[in-house]
Length: 84
Image 1 (cartoon, rainbow, N blue to C red):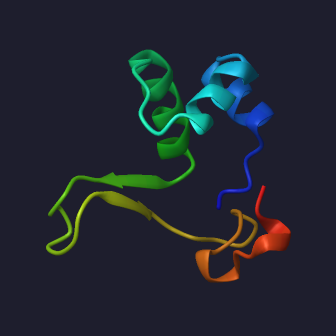
Image 2 (tube, rainbow, N blue to C red):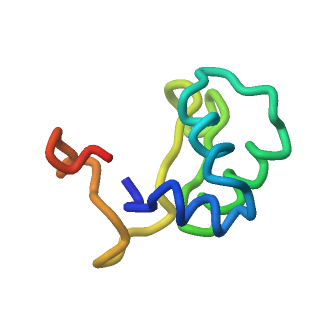
């Protein structure tokens, strides 16, 4: 949704592309250092991570701090053609 490639995420998190791909492929990862590095990059790009109940309703998830033009693809515009 941010429009970041695996290469960009790897570069900004200082991880190898293979580590990013491994995180994407696994439902639950135990590589806490890699998870923390990726989370930091995503937060820098405006992603807010929510714990269960932190928004008054629902479970854990993410939100965007703000949206401006050119900051990636808005959720309502996601479809099979722009799913990377």
